[in-house]
Structures are given as structure tokens and as C-alpha cells.
Length: 258
Image 1 (cartoon, rainbow, N blue to C red):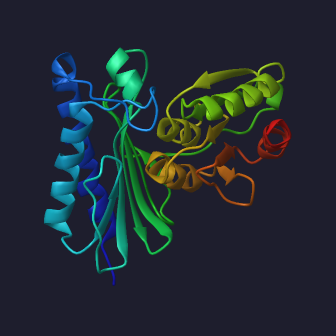
Image 2: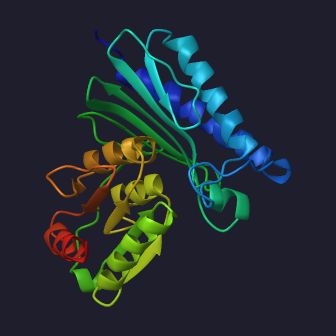
Image 3: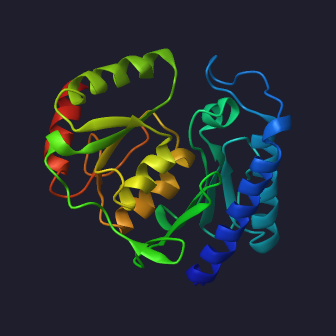
């Protein structure tokens, strides 16, 4: 089945902006629900409202597509196309007002990512990509950094805040902090989007879910970021991204630490 991916990207980018505006508007009145998988896995009523807004609009436009969404509003489809939605990646940052968060939407055709949008509501920035068409910030093309040596590189680190993953993240940080330029902790989607824009030279994401990294991974790859993990591609267990000249040194340190 053919699909106009550019038109779909533009529609979904506008949808992500709408969800982001909802999040900004309701930030002062949000309600935090019970933790999900563990005590640090929080969800708010705004997460749920944002997901309903996104999923309802996707179903209206593409009623026969499948949807995989973090807060459970997805469903099966018959077209071979699947939307992967994280309505609010970085909920603790959003709730605590301590850092960025994003709206993430990706479209897969079978197992291949075909378009992606990551919108940062607080900054008013929208990163996007279409398979084979490059990556953009707004209407402008973006590319990965030139890949400085590791000792000069700025590295993003993302991880789920459960006890087991925090132990793994601590090993990675201990390995990288003394030998890298510096480290920033950011949510997984923006970690990858910032690599795509050259703001971060590399990054590591541990124990994510597909909706956390699907959109960011396509944007990063289309901008020239090299992605891998335990194998030659990114995975939810481990994703290492970097500009090409930096990737071997960063991957060696991370893999040795784990």
C-alpha cells in the first residue's frame, strides 16, 4: 500500500503540537496517578488525555492502521502500518518542572520505520524525519555533529528509573564521565533528536520501550547518527548513538561497562 509520507508527517507534526499545547495548558492542574511498573514510573491525567487526543486523530485519518501506545489506547490493524505513540516522554520532568519532555509519534510499515515526529512543547521545537528523506528541525535540515574525540564529546544518557536499570546506568556513567567532555541526562527521544541536531555528539539509552525511541531513532539515523547496541542496530535494551567518527570509541566504553 502506498502512502503520502510527507503529507502524513505534516499532519502528525501538527497533531504533536496540539498535544504539546494541551500539556502546557494543563500543567498547573494535572493529577498524578498511581505508579505503574515501579515507584518511579509515574503517569498523570495529562499523559492519558494527550494519548487520547493523538490516537483519536490517527484513527480518524487512518482507521485501519494499528496503534501501539504507551498508556494503552492502541489496537490492532489490517494495513501493515503501525503507529507507535509516546504522548509524553519524560513525565517526571514534566511533573517536577526540572527538564524537557516530548511528544513522540512514529509510523512503521511492517518492521521498518517510515516517518517520525518528536515535539518539544516547552521549547516549541518539532523534529521530524521521513525514511530516506533526511531529518528536519521545523523546516530546516539537520545533521549530526562532526564527531569530536570522546574527551571533548557531549554525551546524552537516558534510562528507566527502576533499580536494576539504575545499576546498569551507574556503570555506564562511571565509565564515561572521566573520559568524555561531559554528560547530560535527557529523556530518550530528545537524546536522539539532540544527536540528530548536533547538540549532543553521542548518547546511550538503557532499557527503554519502543515508543520511547522509535521516533527519535529514525530522526537520528536520517541525520547521519550511527546507531547500534549489543548488535548492529538499536534496541530497547541498549541503544548507542553517535556521530560516525566518535561511535567506535563510545561503543567500546559502553559495551565494556555493561
